[in-house]
Length: 255
Image (tube, rainbow, N blue to C red; front, side, top):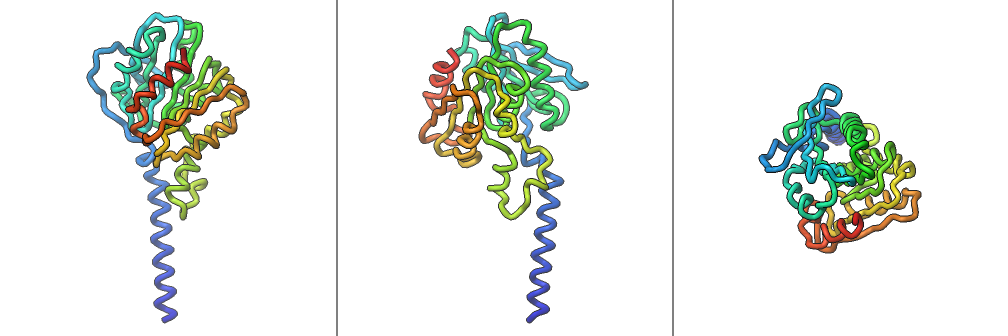
């Protein structure tokens, strides 16, 4: 019986180790879901950054105010173009296709997304009096980092999280995600450096991917006083933008 018991424990140990190794090797496949290029009627700007071609959908060109939008890990930002075009006619809107997304070249990484966000900001800043950063889900990590390194007038975070490591630890509680994850998107580490005058956090009440407590924890780390939290009831992580109040809340905050 002892031999059977120890064999069973050894088998569990092997399965556990294999699971951890697979998570480490294939973690990018769990973090990023690149979307292909989508046909749309809007103009694009092409930026050559670190040898990669980054395509950015550009709406309402020539406005003094601008916003940069960073989407989720499986989001095709082209599908949001018409809504932004109609709801924010007074702003030039830049919808960023990450590396590997929407026809942009390269492979997405945290370092690459952070670097591209700052480079795009630097290339457009002289064309606008003020810039607003908007990030959804994974994009919230990019937006928080940008706002901690560059001056943005306002910051909007949609279904955000304090760190990817924290979210992953809840999904895989038996594995030490602090050791496994190479890309943690630790917004909590950059929040106190954000210089935005105002921040809006939009939470989906029924979010099962990044549950609301992650957004509340992140919000508690901002040092500026003017931070607003809005909860859209009855919507999930991927359906929050389907609610009629979504753009109403964005417009009220931004305008």
